[in-house]
Length: 273
Image (cartoon, rainbow, N blue to C red; front, side):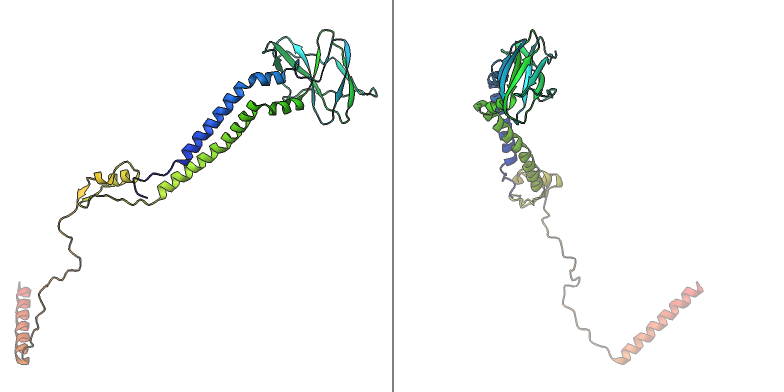
């Protein structure tokens, strides 16, 4: 890859898209808060209201969780159960304590607070008798599953849900792509083009070129040597070798004898000091 060439930052654009989608989800959910509050308001969305010291027959379906609520004075205050539920044969239905899935909720723009006092789930459909034994507080029966289904049909909530899920899915993918592309960029061999022919770049300049922080044409470096470096295998005697003619045997013998005499004389001089 040439230094001037840049890869498309897919990881960056995917991360931006994920953030935009999450932002859309937050905005859509905020704008739909009024509709959600109406859906969760027991005064508006219920399957039955039992007045104080009275009975009310309510039809229930199996496989659903019904929440029983009462109005309380402030958040954190617990309402009294004070209710008995019987089937058509007079059998008493067990009432379970509410869990974290049945928190307190508000109505009338937050001015009224409802507290969950119990939940029931039946195995047979039919009409059940609700006896409110409290003398001052109404009893509200809410089908939470029906509320959830209605909420999922709200356009703003659908957009918020889809945008949030898609954004949370794209965000880690963008991070993985960013890490993979970053690693490939480090491992990829860079072909430096446009370097001056008479300059050798320094180590610092090579690093800057590799990181794309310096244009190769701006290399100052050091000048290349003007004279070529000699080869390590140069013949020290460039002249043609001369053919040495052999001397006569007699002359060679005399030379050897003279040399021996000289060596012997030198030895004597060395030994005598």
